Amino acid sequence: MFKTIGLMIVPPIILVIVATIIFVKVLSRGEQKYDVFMVEGNELVVLAGIPVRYRINDIETVIFSNVLGKYGSFVGIMKIKKKDGIFGRSFRFDASAYHKKFVLSSTQEEIDLATENLMEQLRSYGVDCKKD
Image (tube, rainbow, N blue to C red; front, side, top):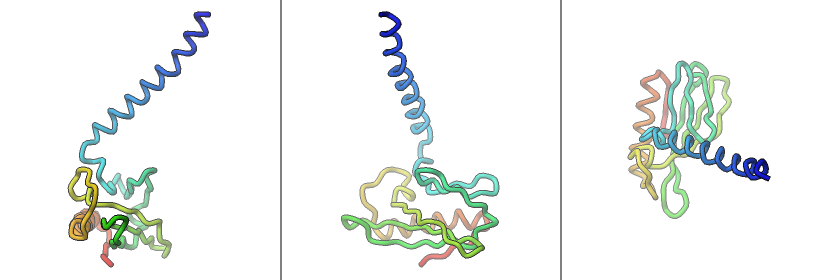
């Protein structure tokens, strides 16, 4: 009987430990959790849910634009065009990328500022950028 109770307690304890580790890792990222991308070695890593990696040498250009999203808030869009002419998927960002904190809605001016910031970062790594 005690073995059964012990086996019933172990999975929730493991779940709590794993959840705590994940929570601490997320909190320790600070302002980095609002980054759209980061550069590791020779790779551009787009931080969108599951990170997507592109070799910097394979990128022809990064195209930025913005659209009016839901409820009157603007959304920035980043598309990566590779040298073989293939476009990657669209990555969306909001004013959180500029303010480095959570925002409920984004104005066009804030998205433009975030876009300029992101373009400046990419150009520092030799990546060509343009804004539509």
